Length: 265
Image (cartoon, rainbow, N blue to C red; front, side, top):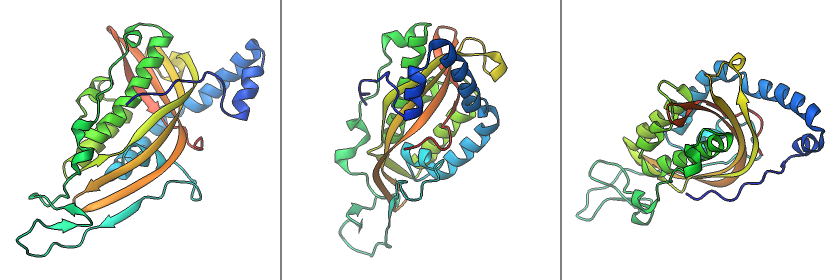
């Protein structure tokens, strides 16, 4: 999935004010804001995973992100199409326009097959031990996450995070669970702006050599199937997405993450 050009300008009124604030004042405010936004990660990761695993079993990336939202008027509302029991026939059993496979799972449309999606490539700059490298590695993680939802291939996604990271493991487990009895396509997650890229100190619970990356992501759930149940959610909405990127060995790895609650649009 290609990521559109990023805007370094603020995208909200509050961020615009910060953008116009003198550097010395802005750094103090940024540090305070970052601590408020990122410090709860250590306590909130367990909740993140529980929500992701529960909500994403039949949803894609957008649905798991949407599970954090309290926006009944604007949140994406999936359309559920339960399938009736097939009747005996010499023809292939059908349900809601989908053929029922021999394993009892609806057959994925060929035009949206997993091999129609291109695996994201890690930019060369993302391999550098710099803040820009951390930023691009974080963007690559988001693209790979969307790719995993659309294909069921979690191998690359797993290689982009450190071991025993609940935030990352929760997504991997949820994707594997979905594809054990279904599939998904049409998920998209496009980074629209970079809000902040800044080193994270040990007092915030981060490993050494960690960079915090906070950006806005516009996401669409797409279509997912579990067994003979189809969920369609094509609404588009934007959330904030934060990652701790840590330089380990010779590469950047995700060591923590969060979707700050209440920052969706």
